[in-house]
Length: 150
Image 1 (tube, rainbow, N blue to C red):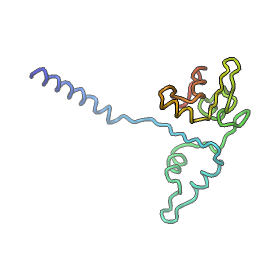
Image 2 (image 1 turned 180 degrees about the vertical axis):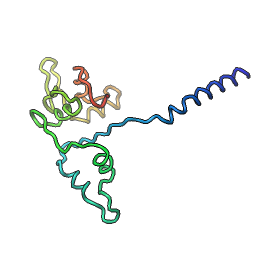
Image 3 (image 1 turned 90 degrees about the vertical axis):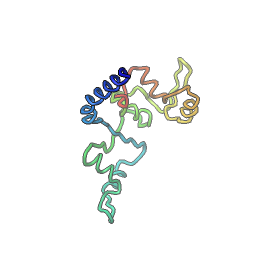
Image 4 (image 1 turned 90 degrees about the horizontal axis):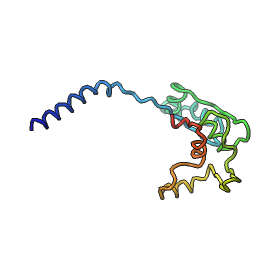
């Protein structure tokens, strides 16, 4: 009985000691929205457009988080072919392109890498045999760090 009380008291003291740290803990978050194929001025148009009833932006949270308190990239181009796979890899790694196209064929292994096909990911993910898209797996095998992993 006394042992259980001491254990409970020790747990309470430890939690009480951690309380100031937990109260002051604040998560550092990075929010990135990437839209493939969205014309660069479409979001600006809706952010500038005001709701006549409220006077707020049509996209109030985009306006608040990215325009007032954050940063945004209006447009960008990759060096080389403007394709989704290479563009994605440039944004995620900040390095020269390791992925050169949306679909690549490895003549050595006779394997095709389809970087944009989500259907196999869903099917193999449900079966528990795949957890990531081929692009992420290729970059991991090359030791190229991703922004998301930071």
